[in-house]
Amino acid sequence: MKVDEIEEAIIRFTQNGIPLTTSPFKDLAESLGLSEEEIVERIKGMQEKGIIRRFGASIGHRDIGIVANAMCIWNVPDEHVEEIGNIMASFAEVTHCYERPRRPGWDYNLFTMVHSYTRADCEIVADRISQVTGIKDYRLLFSEREFKKTGVRL
Image 1 (cartoon, rainbow, N blue to C red):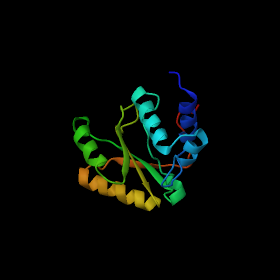
Image 2 (cartoon, rainbow, N blue to C red; image 1 turned 135 degrees about the vertical axis):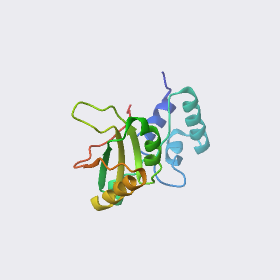
Image 3 (cartoon, helix red, strand yellow; image 1 turned 60 degrees about the horizontal axis):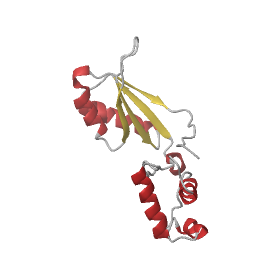
Image 4 (tube, rainbow, N blue to C red; image 1 turned 30 degrees about the vertical axis):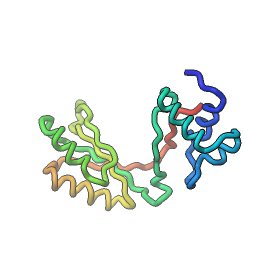
């Protein structure tokens, strides 16, 4: 899909994060000789055309002290995955909840991601989930290192 110069400038400006201010598009608008309202309208138009699929926010959780990240892996009876998965996903501490196929030698089929300030906090959350769901066969796999996550860039 072809973009014009203004659309390209908007993409380049937004792809690395939008300033956390009351007027995040002001500098960009001024540099392009446009108003902030025109920038916002262009962004809406780019979304309608499918040039921009979504705007999302992500918090640098390590930057705010959330350094314990646990992938909780669960052995859930297949016939109860939907029900148990919905319960697990309802916990505020769970940011992701996925069903995955079992593999030879790997009994775990439901995965939840929990972020917290300490490993002990993650263990407490997993224990609460276990108590509520009755699923006792689980493990916590803690992140050792974070690799930078980025979206598509121009």
